[in-house]
Length: 246
Image (cartoon, rainbow, N blue to C red; front, top):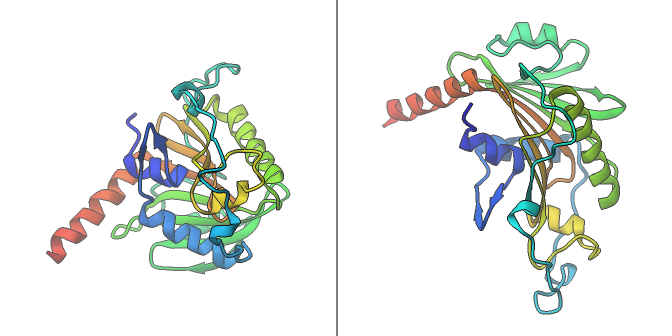
């Protein structure tokens, strides 16, 4: 299946391919604002003195192969489908509430349901996101709390990537990169993440959709499940709304 531009941006915040950077979608911004409100303490203010100087730091050159890794140690899975807690993509609000009843229901908004609970032993906020007109589930986003400190944060991301790899096979794309003037080991890794100068994300391109696992700029783990069919419906309904307004 074809990888949608919207999900590439959504999965990685900014997916770097050569020198191009995708702009995050509206859903990314909404999810990250929600994570700020519900899970993450307010980040320290970034000042010019809190990041290394361009002149004093030399960022190691990386090849394209290093920037975009395709792992091959685990056999490819056959018939891989996007799944989360038995939820059926395309279901309405009430059916999704029933499927996610293991989590604490928090509230319902126009286009999403919000839940609190745990993924494994980690505190998490779960968003079920629906199409704007038909109100069909097209996306699940899990905002998972992570320990403080870059080493712990990266380790937690790797832990979730490994679990997803065991379930779905190797990721189709994996990205670990710092942009100048930052680099791993400079002591400013969390600052780099907060200002979108460091990217850690994996993407699974499955038979019926996509799964992404990344470190967000708010320093949590964001795991997202998107169904191809209802993602297309979501885009169609958004375009239709724009046409009607014009």
